[in-house]
Image (cartoon, rainbow, N blue to C red; front, top):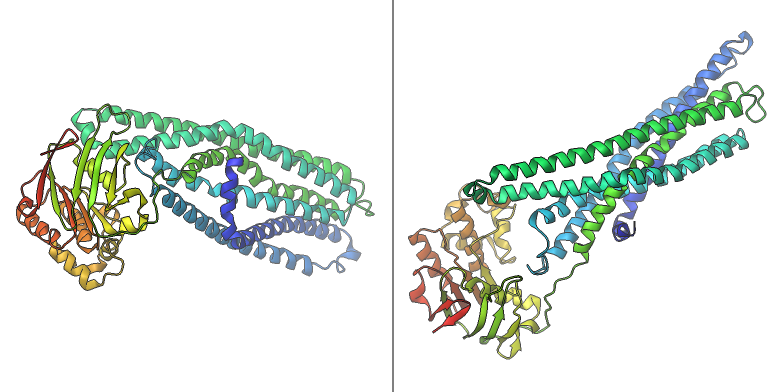
Length: 549
C-alpha cells in the first residue's frame, strides 16, 4: 500500500475537480437512497390513507410526488456531472503521470535501462498508468462517498428512532471495514496474475511485430504465435478468476442486505420511535436499509482490484525514481579542438572492447571520415561523443574542458547526430522539422526540405501535412531525409553522421552530402561508401575498436 503514496501526491494539482467529483458522487448516492426511501414511504402512506374513508382527502400526495420527481432528476443530473468531472480529472492526472514517466525515461542511457525491454516499457507506460485510474475512480471517491452517505442515512433514521439508527450504522460501518479486507485478500492473487499476464502478452506481441523478418527467416513465427496464445490463455484465466470474485462480492452483498433488512424489520415491527404500530414508517425503514447498501457495492468491488493497482504502482515506481547515470557540469561550449584521449569502452557482458584505446583530435571546422567493417566500433565512438554511453577509461575534452563538465544544454545545442534510423513523430511536417530549430520560419523549413530533395512533400497541405504515427505517410528514404533536413536546420558546431544516406540513390546522396558538408562546423562522418570522401579533410580506418593509420 505504501507504493501508492507517491501517486496520491500527484493528485495535489487536481484537487479541486477531484473534490468536486467526490461531492457529486455523494450527491448522487444520497439522491438515489432518498429516491428509493421516499418512494417506498409514499406508496405505503398512500395505501394506508386509502384504507380509511375519513383520511383520504387529508393525505397530501403533492409534496411526496414532487420530491420523488425532484430526486429522480437530481440523481440523473448528478450522476452525469459526476462521471464527466471525475473522469476528466482522472484523465488529466494520467496525462501528467504519463508525461512525467516519459520525462524520466528520456534522459536514461541504454545502460540505465538495460533491464527494461521495449514491451515492458510499453506496458508500464500504457497499461500500468491506465490501471492507476482505479485509485481515484474506484477507491478514494467511492470510499469517501460511502462514509458520508452512511452518516446521512443514520441521521435520517435517527430522526425517527435513534436505536434503529445505531443498529443500522453499526452494521454498515462493520461491513465497510470488513468487506474491503475480505475482497482485497480474495482478489490479491488474481489481480497479480492479471497484471503479469497483461505484461507478458504485450511483450510477446511487441516481439512478434518488431522481429517479423527474423522470425520468418528462422521459421520461428509459429513458435512465437504459440507463446502469444499461451499468454492470452493466462490473461483470460486471470480475468475469469477476478470475475468470479466480483460475482461472489455481489452475491454476498445481496445476502447481507437481505439479512440486514430482516433484522431492521424485526426491530421496527412494533414501533418506530413513538409511532406504534409503525405504519408507513416501517416501509421507510425497510427501503432505507435496502438503499443504504448501494454505498457498499462500489467499495467492495474496488478493493478486489486494489492488488492489481498496487502491482501497477510497484512497476511504475522504479522507473519514476530512476535517475540518469550521466552527470553534466555547467561549462559553456567554447570553440576549439575536440580531443579523444585513449578511450576504452566495452558493452555490458561483452568480452571484447568495442573501442580500444582510441585517440583522436578534431580541429575546429575539420571534417573526418571513419571507415571500416561493420562492428569495428565506429558507431560506438559516436555514441561516446553524444554521451549515450560512457567510456570506462580515457577522456574526451573540448580544448582543456572535460566533456563531462559541459552543461547538458550546451552539449545538446552544439552537437547534432544523424543516424540511419530516423524517428518521425506523429505530427505535422512542420512540427517534425521544428524539433531541430524551434525558431525557424517557414521559409527556412522549406529551404531545408528542398536541399534534401523533399520539395514534393510541400504539394497540397505543405508544411501542415500530417505524417502519422512513425511517419507512416512517408517512404523509408523520405523519413531518412527528414532527419537530414533536421541536421541542416540544427545550428550545431559538431555534426556526427552515422551512415546518413544509407538507402538513397546516388544522385540524391551526392546532393544531400554536398549540402551537409558545407559550412564551418566540425564533422565526423561514418560510412561504408565512397560518396563524400573526396570532400573530407582526413579519412581514418577503424578496425577492432582501434584507429589504424
